[in-house]
Length: 318
Image (cartoon, rainbow, N blue to C red; front, side, top):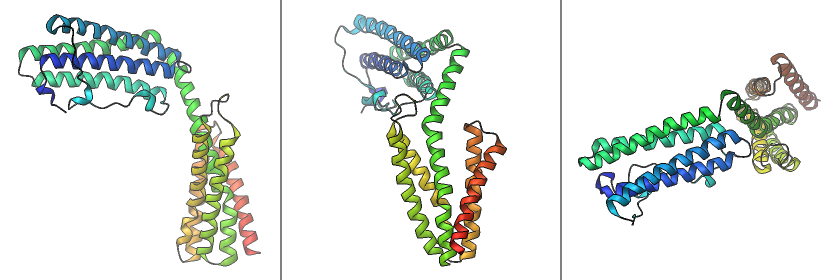
């Protein structure tokens, strides 16, 4: 890799041409990823790509005028100081806000780089060239804001944001909540039954660990096989199953770990406190994301947990 200050005027211009082409293709890729679910935002990125193409044509005309037709291949990753960006197709499916932030950062990073390079350049012609490129990026950023205002009014943006929030709830919150509830509640009975029947914390820990991992595997497969997500929008089965399985295991492990404490009474007290915290978290998630009133959410979760807990105590003490 070479330092930016070591590039000739010709190489700097060639680098700018390649960067504009790369950014244009990134915007086109983003538009394609958004076209189905967020058509208004996709249109914004299509027009931004057209702006990048216009800048590239202006740079090509300037390059041809000064240096001829051959353009050396100078890329961002050949020069120190540029941030390396993964191709869009290598990224997991991004949320709408993630895409907007990516586009904003692309413009800001390129503009800052050119301004910093221009301030450090000693050659007048290179300083002017880099300054012109920075101004072009600044104009493009303003143009992007104008395109967003034209194609993405507040009502459309709110609708897209609401769609993104629903997708996040269906694909992440819902399977995670299902797993957390199952792991936190269903493992209570075997853990506390083992603790009261044997009187040994280690036995309760073994039972709890086995129940938590087993429930995680079972729930993960059940969730993954229940729906392929093509019609419901609930996401890919693998991700959804993995989220459910992991959260189920975590829900059970939380009140299993206290039984590593050698003293049974202290272990029971700590485990009970952990259960209260788990049920409170579940109630909050149901209220925050599932439109359930706080009182109703608390009563439903607390009643289910209390019944399962009591079942384990009764069976263990019997």
